Image 1: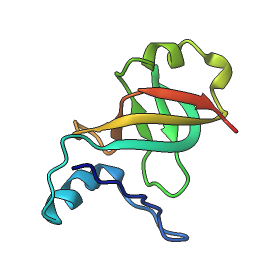
Image 2: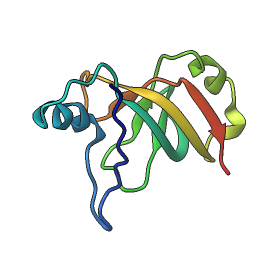
Image 3: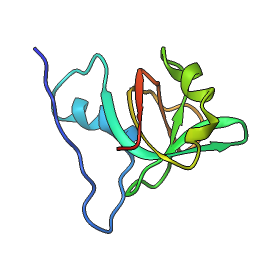
Length: 108
């Protein structure tokens, strides 16, 4: 069975996307993977790609996935709006959630 949900932060509030897998589990469901489609501003910080998203406390770190290298080779997209589809990864060290880059699309 496949489930789907849309999550939007309340106006003037932020949330931590890394908490989504735990919220799914707490609701009594098992998620094999959490696929995220998100629009944000592509940035490069300390040699790493990240997606700054309005309404989130921390950016998504972009790492792994079939399109990560392709996106990394597009310096023309830095500072622009990009839509990224990726899989939410279990939190490693640091406050940001990591998202693979399964697909991306320049701002629309």
